Image 1: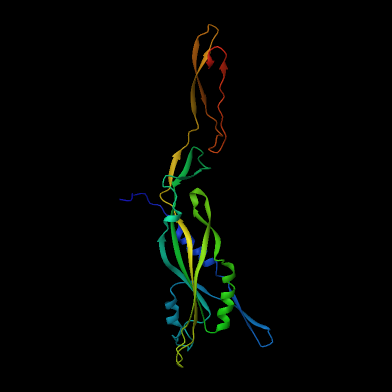
Image 2: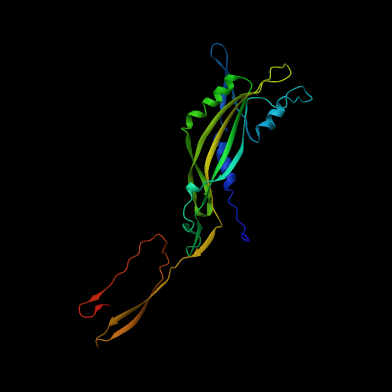
Length: 253
């Protein structure tokens, strides 16, 4: 029903990678009472649901160490929704001439807008670690941060994609018993204004023009001539013009 032509641009994968790369270099510092830095810790980031990592916090390995340590961050896609307010006319074309075969161009019709929801979770065991992480993230979102993302390789499209911070929630998972480990969780909700492109297509370019002209000869009779032009270096973006010659008695010829 949708056609048999396979195509895949890794667009959604690129969105996930772009989102994750925003938060994969967050550090926290441990200091003593005098303010001297004792250690710098790179906060691990992984794709997956928060509950998956919370279930591993209290799990103890054979060596007696917990299966996972804090602080840690995780993220995942939380929603995928069509946005009709960003939709362009269906018959709009996006096209680009091929460099390897100048007689052919790639094109596709208007992209389909989708809002992709992301959820970023910050898990720590003390409040200071959490605030260090959060304060390195929130100032960049006012509430939107723009990320350049490659969306259609064959068309060379790199679009400035808005990433908007929608919500910030805080939760303390510590129940108060001596057997549970404390975990503070900050949950940040984001919306990325994504677009998905349809089937990539090819179209031949007209590079040869044949024009029939009439010329007044010495006997005052019109003779028909054919002029053929075939510029080998003609490109789609070049400027072209037409020259018309007028005769005072016979008008345009």
